[in-house]
Length: 187
Image (cartoon, rainbow, N blue to C red; front, top):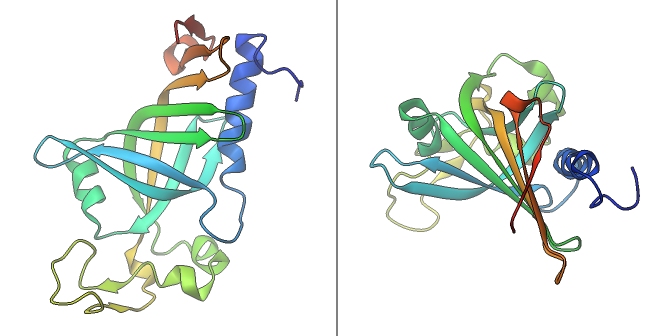
């Protein structure tokens, strides 16, 4: 990658895809978190931190794995518009991905399931279902359930990137429908 990624729309887009792809790298802790926004069943915004699991630049998609019974899947089923926000503090780079999401159940996808640690598998099988009211903080169980693994795939339609580098902040927007050519915007 070119060292100065702020000199052209092409280099900035390349830097964005590198940042997005880096988040899918397996690692410990909570690295790879992005903020996912959906439209709530009542019409208001809903946001939460999720782990970006897969990026396909050639197709223009990102994937998030989730329990098939989470409220975000009901929200996507009702209105499939979604956005993801990525923030890189070191580079002061904000990337917003917007598009349409689809729910892809992967209960029979052994490759995804087999690649997970037992701890990760426990995220797919919480009882009662995620978001359900419970009597006390620990009144739930975790049991790995392959049939509850679902993939949320976002087909990216727009990438909006801001680089904060005062006094030379910059912003650009890339649209799938414009073959990702890009347009500089006022920051």
